[in-house]
Length: 171
Image 1 (cartoon, rainbow, N blue to C red):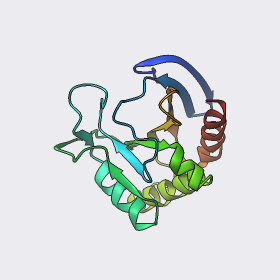
Image 2 (cartoon, rainbow, N blue to C red):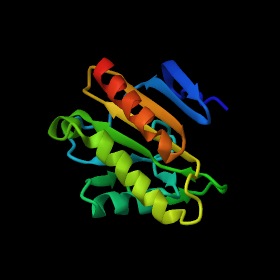
Image 3 (cartoon, one colour):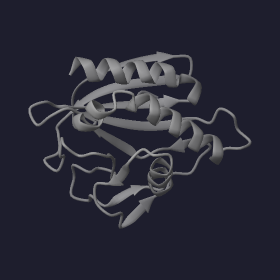
Image 4 (cartoon, rainbow, N blue to C red):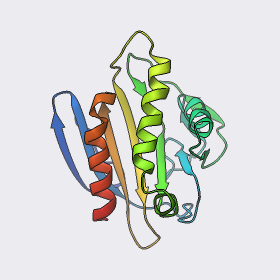
C-alpha cells in the first residue's frame, strides 16, 4: 500500500522489499516555531480543526525520548488518543525543526536509535515488527515542510536515515 501525501504538493517514494518510504511536501503550520529546542509530537490532522487527538503511542514515545535525553513534547496537550490495533507499531508524527538539527546534526540517527530501542522493549517476542512512522522536517518560515512517511522495520532504518538526510539537505 502506497502512502499518499496529505496536504501535499509533491511526493517522491521508493519501495524495496517490504520497506516503503515516501516524502510529501506539505504546508507548514503557522504554529511551528523554528527556534524550538525539542522534537514535537504532532496530533493527528494537526492542520485541521481537531488538534488534540494523538496516536496512542505518543505518550510512551514522548516519555521514552525524554528519558534517553532527546527532548520531546506535544504540540498541544492530548485530549484523546487514537488507537490502531494490529501487529504493527504506529508511531506519532514527530516534527524536527532547524534549531534542533543545527544544535545536533546527528539528531536523525539518535532519534532512529531511540525508536528502535523503544520498540524492541515493546515487542519482546517479535524481533522485526512493522513500524509506521512519519517524521516532519521544517527548516524555516520561508520553506515548506517535508513529511517523510516510513513503513518497514528497524533493519530498514539506515535507508530511512539516508532519506531524512537527503530530504533535509535538499529543502
